[in-house]
Image 1 (cartoon, rainbow, N blue to C red):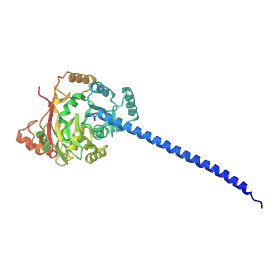
Image 2: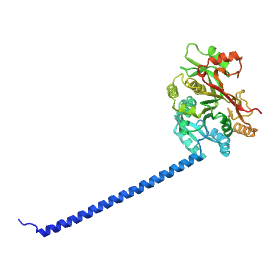
Image 3: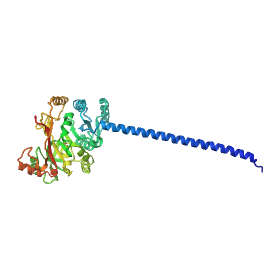
Image 4: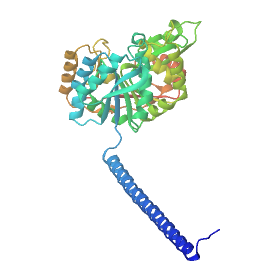
Length: 396
């Protein structure tokens, strides 16, 4: 058997070593190149992150949190009403730089394909998205009989999360004209109060298993009397307690944050939604009362803010302020334009926050002798740690 000469074998080995050496060198060079490129990408991304953080910090310094976040609870099928509000509320607020964010509140549950299409068309026509789509029922679900109350609760749970840092979160019905710039100025004196719940105050009791009210009154004495004589004895009834009417509901930022994460509120919403489809269910007709019940039964101390002297209503004669921030129950474009003109024509006025009174020591406000009022105030189990504060236009 023949064998390869030694010199030929050495030559082949040498050639193989050269090839391998080149391959190794090339592999090492490629690896070094990849590592170098990775370092360059890393440093570039790091610089970009630093620039973005710097820009975000600068923007935060230039644009502090919005003072007021206001949601108009609306129906997807009423685009004309929203256009009236845009022209009489949103445009003037933008023109004067009001420190407010304004949204139209619609529910994402129960929207028909046509509803979704119309909302998209409205966004394109307006040229911006001024909607807040919340986790709630809307008109196409059972004809909307749950939508008002569902959107009310969903808005106050949504807004502090979606728009954090505001001093106040507010809700208005979409038949309300709101002078946004004046409302923001009006609320300034109350910004330091803890857990504000405010609006036009009324009083009621609540049949908890039937989701309906009993014992309404405009004042505390009447509410205590109505609770004793106007509510069913055989039912579980909570009350009396204060609530604010739908024209305008205001929560302080801290109360909004609590509301958005409260297990008490989440449980109430879950129970309310479970009644949908039953004969006795939570209902638009009692939405404002139900919100008052939710707060009253939460074992929470609040600053109850009465702004009764700064609100108007086209159908409720007691709400007839000449110096106002809200006008309610408007049914046409002409009515919105009339109230906007009336608001613009108001002489300048300043807000006045009176001394906040501890609930058991509240002085007479809506009738009843002092002793009778004090006896009535003791029947409000919800509110013994609350304070009642009155905010209105300063005397002329």
